[in-house]
Structure formats: structure tokens, C-alpha cells
Image 1 (cartoon, helix red, strand yellow):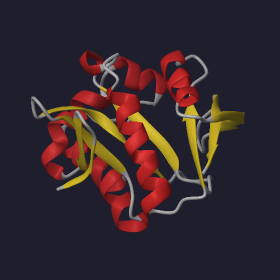
Image 2: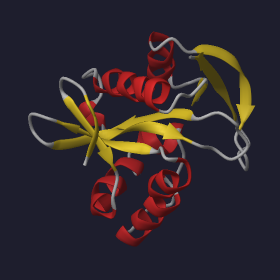
Image 3: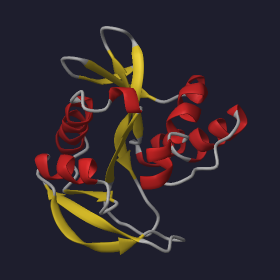
Image 4: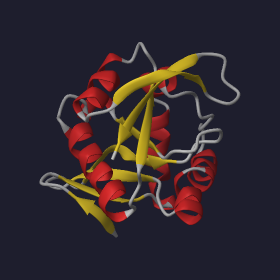
Length: 169
């Protein structure tokens, strides 16, 4: 079921049918480097990741990460949506795309749709985003979306600090 649509993309809820795609995405070197190793090596691991992540978020908060599919080819390109992270009050914009779909404008196109949904439909007052300081493409994207750097934060259980950006709606 399509939740959001842009000129070129469909954003739908992730399901257990997307385990193969999730395995490919979370095991890309840039995903592991900038987002983290999610310990997804098998289809069962992917199922667990979906249950504890996107599918669980839909059930608990009414939002989560969406599968981003290119309309013309019906090809999954990445994920984009809102997360609720432990230790943080505000919803967090997240996105990740397969390498072959980067530099296509899909990240900003899907992120704009997600932000519009968060503001207009979910009535969120504040949305944050987190990015590794070395992940220059993500930092540039957040700035283009209107996010402002706020401070360095440490994710629960993580040693490294990352940048926290905020968007007042």
C-alpha cells in the first residue's frame, strides 16, 4: 500500500516481503560505516531487523521507515522515513539508498515527502536528524532540507558522537 507518492517515487511500508532488499541495503559498506552494522546476515536476521525496526515502529508510533521504489521501473532504491530512537524525544528523519541510486535526487525527493507527511499529517512540532560528521552527502542533504546543526550527541551504546540537526516545523 502506497503511503506517499512523489513525481518519481512511491513510498510504502516495509513488510517481511522485503527481507532480501533489507539484507542488501544494510550490508552495503557505506551503510555499515555511517549508520552501523545491524548484524543482518540471513533472511531470518532481516526479518528480526524489520520486526524490531520499521514494522515495530509502525505499530508503536504510527510512523517508521518506508521503502522507496522508483515508479518507472518498480525497483526498490532505498528507505526513508521517521524513526523513534531510544534516548531522544523527537522523531528522527532517516534515509539510506543503495549505491547505484545515489546522486539521483531520490533522497531529497523522498525526504521532502516524509517531512511534509510528518508536519501536515502527523502534526509533528519538531523533527531531528542525525549524521556522522564524515558523511558529507548526508550533511549537505539535511542542510538543503532546512535542518540546522544543534549539537553533538552519542547514541545509547555507541562510543562515537554524531551531529544532531533539528528542523522546527
